[in-house]
Length: 189
Image (cartoon, rainbow, N blue to C red; front, side, top):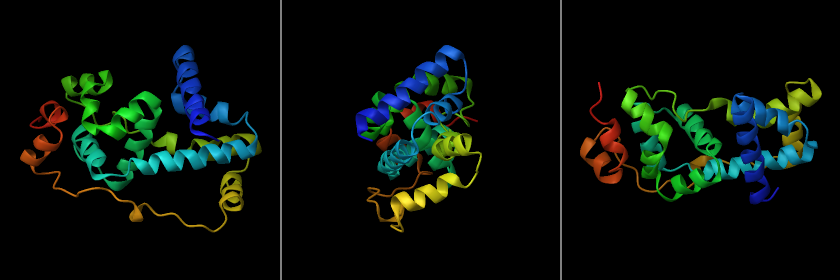
């Protein structure tokens, strides 16, 4: 699946979810489940690639500010949430995580003082597996198909260049690196 097709899948699910008033992840799973198994695997492969590209300290720092802290598991969910925003926001965040300060949902949650769930979208991480389960009725069908599709090749985010590490609890450093997000989230109760 090429990058344009991947983003078409995301945008189609976003539009359909908004029209139906349903959760994005449920609509995404439903739409993926109508595709041939190989396309679902290709979607998963592209998802992993784009998800991995956000595995950087500066993006993690943005998640840390927005979430009032951010574990490694939560960071997985945050990256999935960024992807669920669609191609335009994904590209903006990939270029400059501080740009999230302009996103209406982020601003609204900062104003409300409760952002613990903003952009942390765990279920998006498992859309491919859930689509396979919906198609086959077998919870493990995706993982067997994924193993056959990818072979035994192991990928690890540990080998990714995450950029320069820095202390997320250093307010001055966070203000320097994320000058737009910091005023929204630093110093709140």
